[in-house]
Amino acid sequence: MVIMDKSFGNKLSVVIRVKNEERWIGHTIQSVLDFFPGAEIIIVDNNSTDQTINICKLFSKPKIFSDNINSSYSNFIFTNISEYTPGKSLNKGIGLATRDNILIISSHCVIKNIDYSILKKDLDDYVGIFGNQIPVYLGKKIQKRYIWSNFSDTERRENYFSNNENRYFFHNAFSIFKKKNIISNLFDEEVIGKEDRYWAIDIIKKELKYVYEPKHVVEHHFTPNGNTWRGLA
Image (cartoon, rainbow, N blue to C red; front, side, top):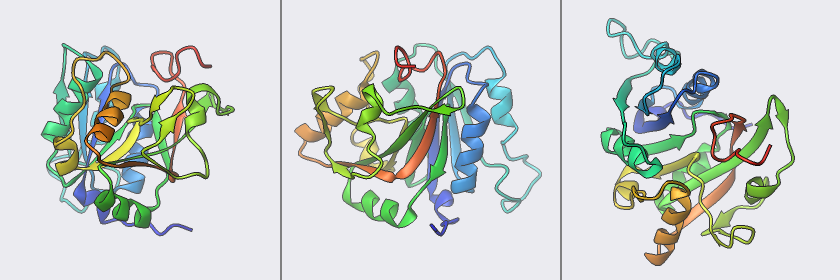
């Protein structure tokens, strides 16, 4: 059984990119608050037209409440980006963060486990950490094929090279960094996809290290707009 570290959330900013994510965004935020109570949450919106932002505001701490109310609310920062690229939106969220550590999580991922003892050590040893993803299609956990085969359930991997992609592999849908490290190694704002793979290649060129840790786990839920899911399910 993992003992939760409820103090870590006070040292964490969470960046979530959204565009019409009303199906899962509430589940994502609730899981963040369950594992990291007190975390600062930064919503980078790309002109959503559904209930995404209203759902986010359900979790935003009312100003009349004290800082110690409970884990049902948190401090939010909302920003919008119209000229969207994945890297540009992530970098904008990172630039708004006020805490020492930064978690990036997809708006349709739900945290299932964090090993805090491993996490704290790895934040000192690595530029970036990414965690395990369990693909869930319409409620059904599916076999880890294609991109999902990169997410071993047991094997920890340093500077992981993906044979099926034939390049260094990092996935930022569930990733965490010390702020000072990611500020010094931001994402490419020009590419229209796979910005996390380009990031990994850049880290290798700089002779730095990142790590895949399978004990940090999310369920990555299907959405027809999710790049990771296109052509897979």
